[in-house]
Picture (cartoon, rainbow, N blue to C red):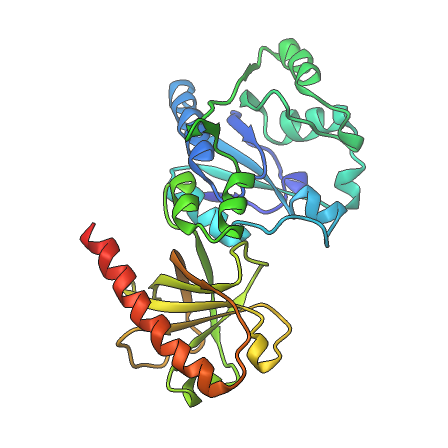
Length: 312
């Protein structure tokens, strides 16, 4: 899969492409249906399939503190797009210059001159250009002059409602990774590099992997049963704590993972942590002894929970 790091500086795609545009945060079941339709049309036209996405996402640019938590980092998004068979991911660098771009220029410079889109899949609520002044009607008017098709997006529903990134975030915030998995088509995951921590877990008898977070994760603070993909391709079960660690007066969100029945040094390695089940919410304990006692109970519950999932 080819990655265009800045579509604004792309030299052009000779022969054109079939294009879809959006944030594609999390690449949930709805996104997967869009990409399947995109690839189908690309094969029919014998053109590359292109996903155009924004980095950072527009809301994060305009309101960094108020923007919702991302479901996937750019790296994770690219990995998922590759697995789904996308030919090209074109990243639009969302900065002040991009935000000031007129709707007409968005079409003529990016969609026509840079990507030469011959078939475009977008939702009816798609907005673009300075002040969100561009809409699908404007896009269709330009497309008609060039013989370009504008096609609607497929809609995927679960439990009678449309699948969306907002629904996934809500499920995770409610401590429902199982519900998020139904919307994503797979377990929600966070990837990151193992870094040196304060080694408190080792002192308490539970040596943990401290994961450097590339983004603010969406899940509720608490303890989870997880599956961890290691750099060597193996997978291990674990108990994860995500939160600010109030018992030791922590401030910044931290993801710590205790791998069950594992000994080894994973410092510097990149791991994928899949959230399988919510065990309990994060609470403050009166002492490290009380915390340690609860950690033993948590690990027992994690073992039982993961065993039940495997059995079912």
